[in-house]
Length: 397
Image (cartoon, rainbow, N blue to C red):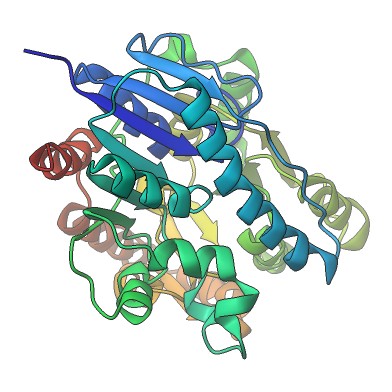
């Protein structure tokens, strides 16, 4: 039997922070097709992409265009880059790709138009894959299709199969509006790693932090990229209000990103609680679960939606969920039933709700128990999640 080949193109790094650290969804995708014995031609802009353990993958390096995070300039520059990327991909494909391709797969928005065109030229099936979307809260703005053209236009491109992550950002609704339907869409939640802790993969620093957690009555935790829209600053505010009353409290913030310095400045100089807040930087999955297993309260106050993998993993580790109502979060977390949730504009109400709840131990345990049932009814393992995708993709061949 001839080995099938798949072309995968993206502008994202395989791991969001560093190898083995960050969201695993992209790596799981590459791992799936590698393990299914596809020959994978991987077009990527990542500078030092290390996936050498995936032996069926051949990397084709694309140039990474610079971006300018300057107001008014950013949108125009972003659009220019988006257009340029289409020509760059097609040039590299036709100049470097000698072997035939059986299926074309675009991961996230950047190269979707050129991949769609290529699939028509080659008469090969095309899969587009999106990790949720930023568009739902932006669609009320004037000229949103133009202002967020790369996101709009890439979702607009029809494919033989569109895989949209059900992460609470209402990707199914957005796709329905943009395409006038959701034909050929696979709407799936990411999987969850139900890990058994392997202490050989836990650093000495993390083990020491874990051991020190027993000294505190209330251990808080967050896990995310430290980006502005993740609003870790809100979580710090909620924790700060709580810790003023319950002084035996500490907050561990796992993750890295461009907002880290600003958050450290807030903790140290604005509200002066640096003795109660620890920034660990990025940790591997084993270390994240290890620290979650001794944490009591999980904070998540994102802007778009809070129903991502960290929330599910926190539930799996018996943490109380404290969050805000946006995206589909309110469909998953119900206030005083399986967690604490407030309206986004009133996120500080979470502090008072939490202060009231911790005095009622039995009720708090009931919320955690109910959240465990929510997890069971909504999420599967990564293996099951990836198998659902594989069945659909393989049908196209």
